[in-house]
Length: 251
Image (tube, rainbow, N blue to C red; front, side, top):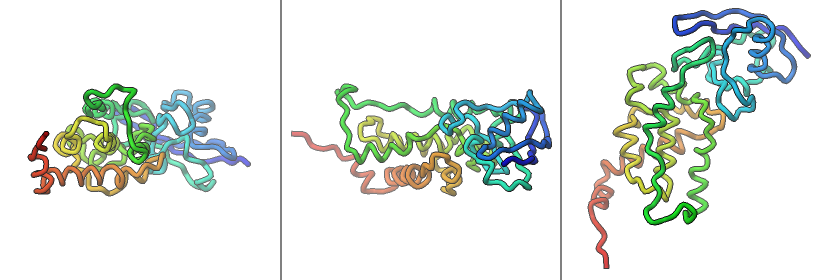
């Protein structure tokens, strides 16, 4: 079964642009990215869009569909009625390069600011040992495909450009949480660094990042809130503070 659908696609570049109307054929089982490809093939060959795997695993085709941050390759046309106009716009938080393609270099800059895993002293790479519970705790965070939809929807940077310098965003605070929870990471100040250097305090746990995650990672509940709790405990809990000051007596 096929039908003619109405689409509004944002066209333009960093200098500005506008929504352009199209009518395009939709076939059963198609996703929004299929329609964008058909527009390129039949009506507007200069339409710019970023994509790669078309399987929801590369994170490349992030955009906003009817105002909601989504992966175009995972947004089925069957979720819209044939009479509905489907509007596709680029991610709002990042500068537009052309049409649906945005400059996401902000995210790579933030990634470089997160200190990498620091192996324990005196333990070779092949000798790492972890409890299965510790493996499972961080495994959820490793499902991230870096689509940056969580970064895009986070109102701390979406609505306040001035916060970008001081705020790493949910994706990279989640990375800090993953390493903070890693029993073999020898860097002991992850939670404090997240608070003092990467803007953890800006996050007010609205869960908007969790809501748009295509991998269904519980970013807020399982990463950001525990990271906040650890940062607060170490800074304000007198018993934790005292314990950090007392050295164990050795034989």
